[in-house]
Length: 248
Image (cartoon, rainbow, N blue to C red; front, side, top):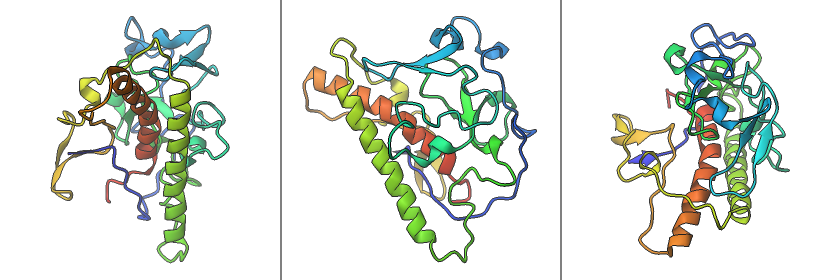
């Protein structure tokens, strides 16, 4: 089974015009007041005052995000730690997105990794496509563009570099007192969310990121590996949400 793969394609999409609140078929929501995100399993678990606080798995560090984070189409992640404050930040950092209701959305949407205990908290880049931008970095390039291969290479290299730096920073911020266990929905063996793909001739899920635990290592080393994989999975899912192409 393949989990967390990302398709990069230069295929053009049919244009969709989006307002600040997303396309009509997948409107943005206010995650702080939406009825489906309240209660003991709601977004309030991560709120301190009027800010959301993200603590990477196993990390000794926490990050406060500004009021209105995720509400309405905007580049909410741009300049924010841990991924988008880096000197070489991934391309998805500057992309617009918003939180949506998965029960009221016909666009591509992915469950958040930043706030995993919140049920039904999903985000979408696709709903924030405008007439002057595209959800996928490759989709604005014409077939005649002779630089397309070079741009795809640089795009992939940038994402890989960003993931590497995030893993390195994650290792340095690991807390000795906070361990991580491999959850069922994070394990690649078996992949419970994968479905059979005719094109790939196997079971895949391109919107989830999984981990295959090795047989060796001390309990502390195995715990650290899970913590780091949890942290880097957030950037992998962001790449998948932004760059995957249903036609690829």
